[in-house]
Image (cartoon, rainbow, N blue to C red; front, side, top):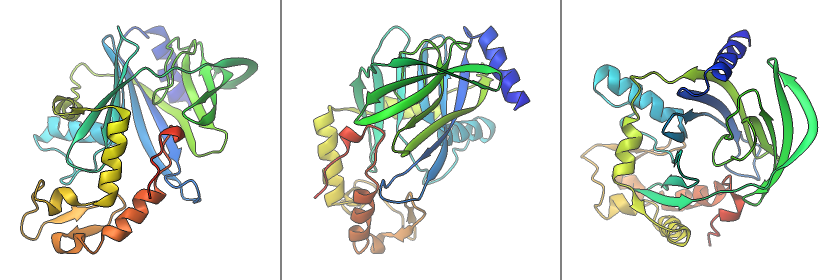
Length: 274
């Protein structure tokens, strides 16, 4: 805790420099289940832009810089966000399970109600704020000690960094666990690569792509758009490993998972699967 406090206070003193805030994220893929998924997400705030992405990308880039090889062959790809400092537009790069990333521009806004509730955490003064966003009711604890109007995901607009955030139904919980300076040597190699080949879409088009994938979960392999070498296995997000011969019989089970794991942060964007 002392090291976290020291790093955060250092950030307060030099917040004009490039900073990374690491969030511990706990969430339910299936709102009807008690199972919790836990991951780390990075919020990078630099002199040029803001980026929010999964730690897996950081690990992959770090290994590539050290060894010349990317991590995770058959890598689990994840969606990410980027916002330029001279714009209010968040570019959402969505990965839905096929061979492509899709680029969706958005300007998310939250109407915050800042309350008088105060608490102290790691010697930082946190203040409570509430909002409705994406079909959920949210509670945020922000600190003016770090005067950056951002938080995890698309949350923004408060007079200080959001240190803790959760919805009232306890489907999502975000908490800053560490802060650090971004080294000058760090390069967002994997994200830059994904950005360069992302396909622009609107929300309606993205929803249709998700429905199409639900209808045919492995179409990009079975239709030959993504090649699997002889003997190669496909690693699914839940750890299931399938050969090409096993894909067609596994479609029904994959559809069940897609339908169950339909609890996005913005609940009002959940796809209505048949």
